[in-house]
Length: 396
Length: 148
Ligand SMILES: [Zn+2]
View 1: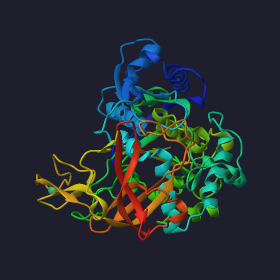
View 2: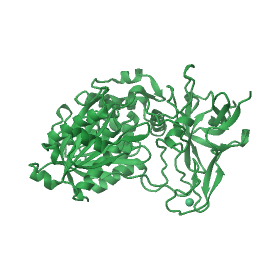
View 3: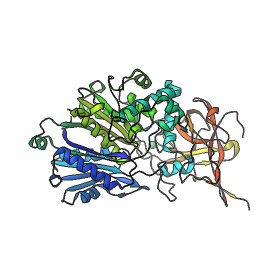
View 4: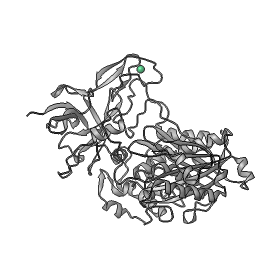
């Protein structure tokens, strides 16, 4: 087991389409997290930014950009990019610095101002880039991959369109109670069924939007937290950033084919399950210890997949959990109490940080109308393009 | 003037008619198969450094999953913005011998209503799009027994 680090502060800028730049959003979230922690920015020893990327160019180098916006004070800086897993990598970097004694208190920030419509690759002719190729050769958008998983679940596990809609209805009801969510109106199964098909069998309301938004955390050593008057802080106990093992037999964004299992039979866990497993191992907890989970519901069907990959149920039993209310408020293991991507829309570099903000508020008992009573252990799960695992275990 | 035919990606497929095949590579040492092709190094971490040589993939497989694109995808997918959007079908196909899943567009006229998971399909030559000089060719998956 690795040592823990304290979550001293959490802050967000509301998700939406606000027409401003990502620096403005990130600075609002950073200031909120610092205020929540009661830490003066000038005392922060390190700032880690999750990069926002436009057109495939990681040019909006985040860490220093936020440090400048907050006022240069000489802190150590790092910037990371791992697509949807960028936030978890930023947290992992901050944690490593704290545990290595390189800093006492670290500010982690992720922010994005998302473009309209489908995510698209950088311009130009780049036949060596799988992300460019899947658009050029197949027109395979992100929702197309979500739809392939959804159809596969329907065929193999008997999931129905109504099961998928139940996920949206649950998450919309929770998002309605979250002041940081973009979509705050309850949704019915009829609303989902009436929305246009984007990629068969998934409809518009099965698929997450892209949003502007920002999230930030102030992390510190447990010793710093004690000195700072926080003897019992929410703590990060594990951060999983694992890659797949060969052969990776799940067709994943942005690949055109899986690895072949002809030469080496697949052993052990598939990629998504291995992400959570590594987090459980590091934290010394299991699915039965969880009070709640925040998972990456890029689509409604994918949330059901995560139930299985987190070990909340057996393979193929995800739909049973949503039907029985197990993952709803008051159920055995509420999932996406924040409202999830369904209510937020994806702000790529902020999203994995936002998941930890929600767990922090839940474990502090300040989540208002979304509060899970007596929450002690939470997990986040997420996966970044090209094979970036992302899972964080938070305890109190 | 006749358009010249060119593959949308070089060396990913070859052959005409019934001899049309997807092309991958196989490692001489461990037998691992790669598509899209790996020409430099075997990616099996237990292997080391076998020689990679070109190999034709099985022409038939079974539908692993399928979907369609109801909205026009962004560039670099090429479509004529002057014309109404016509959804295409995407089919993920499991190849038994290679134990892998390969994505491709469905042959023209194949819709999601024609497909089921587990159905047998075959790879056929197809046209991705045409411009003034070039007919860009690709691979399509087509249910067995269907003739274009
Ligand atoms: Zn090899």
